[in-house]
Image 1: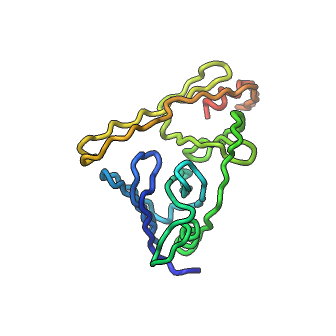
Image 2: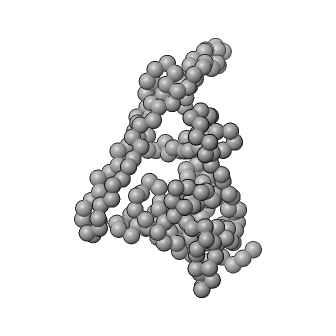
Image 3: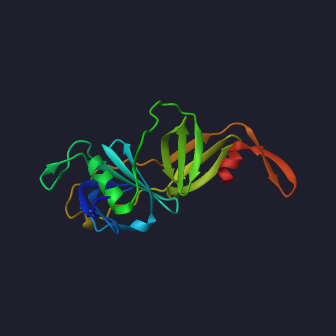
Length: 214
């Protein structure tokens, strides 16, 4: 096993922030700070459970699953360019070696479903709702960003997401404001009935109601 070390990556996005920042991975944990505001995130290494490498819209993502079920997502890693000590190495190779030496974890490659199907199965993992098509995840939603839920109909569940916070003009330090697009609502169509057993009595309810109560 290699020697533990610290590495810094620039222009890395931490979801749900729309601003890039600096991510530092050290033996004791990680730290991320935006370049425009004073937003800071720190997580100790003992909280790390799993690390995954995913191809996303912003190049590549480092997804860190915490032991409490939460997921941390850092976008902006490059496949081909990373210069450390005068040696160019892909970010994946750099991260894989660091994750192994610092945290004794394997950096797994996770492939997302890109079939475009709008049907699949939901899976609740900690604070994340995963929508899976076949054996691959199509997308996932952070449940801590859900502001309200309701049964839109017998077979439909509506999710309303929190509105983005207003950006403090002073915190931008004169930087130009960029237009941010946010998902504000999503509706799931969940047909069928399920049997729920409770206190010796079996009750049949809609699958949508089961999803809503979960």
